[in-house]
Image (cartoon, rainbow, N blue to C red; front, side):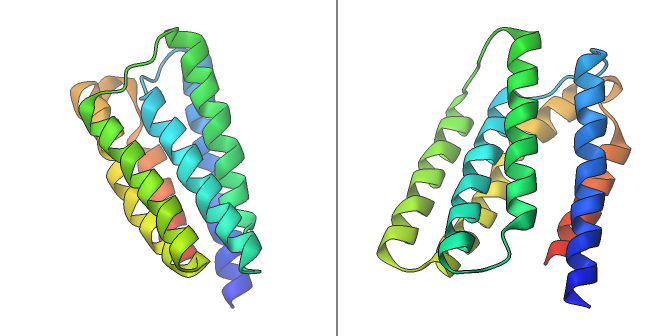
Length: 151
C-alpha cells in the first residue's frame, strides 16, 4: 500500500509542477524564484540523506529536478533575484539542516529539511496573496494532496 501512496504522491506532485511551468511559459503566473530555489536546495538535502540512508528517494529526486527547472524558468522570465530577509533566514535554516545531517543521521536531516521546506513556502504564499489573479489555487491544492500522500 505504501508503494501506491508513493506513486500517487509523485503523479499528483508532477501535475501541479507542470501547471506552474506552463503558467511561467505563458506568463500567466507570478512566482517566487527564491522559494523554488530554496525548495530545490532542501530537496537536494532530503534526496542526499535518503540515498545515504537507503530510503526511497524517488519523490525528492522528482521534486528536486522540477524545482530547479521552475527556478531557472522564473529567473529567465524575471531576470532578477530578490532574496529578502525572510529568504536569507530560510537559507540559514537549510545550512542548519546540513549541520544536523552531519552531526546526526539522515532521518533528522529529513525532518529538519521538511520543516524548513514548509517555512520556505511562506514567500510564495505572500506572492500568491498579493497576486491572486496570477496563480492557480488548483496548483497548491494538488501539491498539498501530493504532500499528504507522501507522508
